[in-house]
Image (cartoon, rainbow over all chains, first blue to last red; front, side):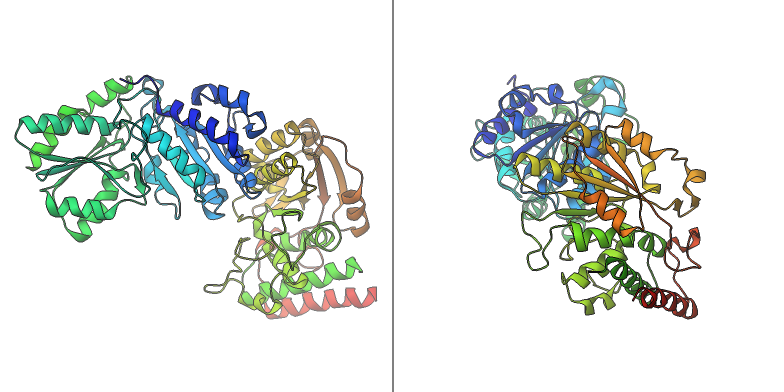
Length: 309
Length: 271
């Protein structure tokens, strides 16, 4: 397995991009270590803004800088950016349409045993209701590189969540790993569709391999762009397969599963299983233990897929 | 230009806006009218013909609810047609009850308190990084000082040594529920801001010359300026002054007529 977490792939890429783009600004709130920004800060001191432990101020400052043509990347733990500074994201970024990228690191249950205070299982539900805000979750380090390059060119506000630990590679390299607004078909199949995002994508691919032994041909989609979501690919899945299993490191309310269901139910209702963290304060444990506890594993996905076919 | 007269005209026109649309934040618009008049007719380098000039000064109305005064001034200066003021708060009008960037001359959407100063810090910081001779001004309310984010921004303004940043507090002593000292005691704002590392100036917020003097005074290098403008909520209309109920009160026909008479008399006496 790769030893490079997505957050490190992000910081390596932004460090490189900042060399040729002086408008890139990284803003952080005493999180340079946890984001892995030490090299960036050393190489680009003039393009680095440390605001201390003040996430609301952090987003407001970034918005103000964006009005001067800067391209601020606000980098801090997802749990804080998507809750503490949510009003600044809503008003200073989304409403004022400032070109600010909110990079939430160690999202979902990455911080595991640090407790619910440090988890962000609501962030997708909230940010995808913000008009004009792109919402993305990379599934591996290669796709993170591609997304970061795309972000540096985009003029839209965006919320991007990535995990803390290393994840299995889904892609061989960054080329072709990301197309804005388009799902990637990772495994072809016509029996059932598994749509996953972020760290659960590699589990979905593994589940498809297990299902093959069951004689079930599962299609696997990586929905890296949660908003704007790939409506066409979702409807194709509804049309061509018997149902959809959605998998995400997020509350079962309001995230990827809900976004898919909103489209399916209004156009071509098919059976769905929405896999994620149930409506409870997350069980104590590290992220793998939490995933196992809630059945967010290749085996768990297999079971849900079998219940449809 | 006689700015005292101009401020009185702005008061009269913003009252007309509120009276005609039957909505608005009356008291705080009146208390900040002299500050806005001095800024827009004397201090700010802004050009209605070129509202997006990168070298313009920036003004952020953090107490966004006092938008009636801002719109009245922007229209008077020609940022948009005066006629459009009649559409205030009507269906599909860009002139809504808090500043909107759809309106030429408005820098940021505001409305939730405690946001403007952080954004202003970001603007002043960006201007410094680019070596631009741009000054940033941010007007806050006194009730707004209870927002924690104000103090995050206060810390940052001093930390980044933003001597191109001026924050102003419209210190009218009243918020929607009553006296600021009863709602949440502010105590000495001067000593608080000084402790946060700002160059604090206190001024009579209705004294045009005193306001000009403080805004044009020389800056301390590397230190942002905080102007505490002592004001009267509802200033200029006798029955509105120092009355919390006029925070967003709308005058009746008779009250409006009396207000206009009072302001017109004030202007006539000045002439």
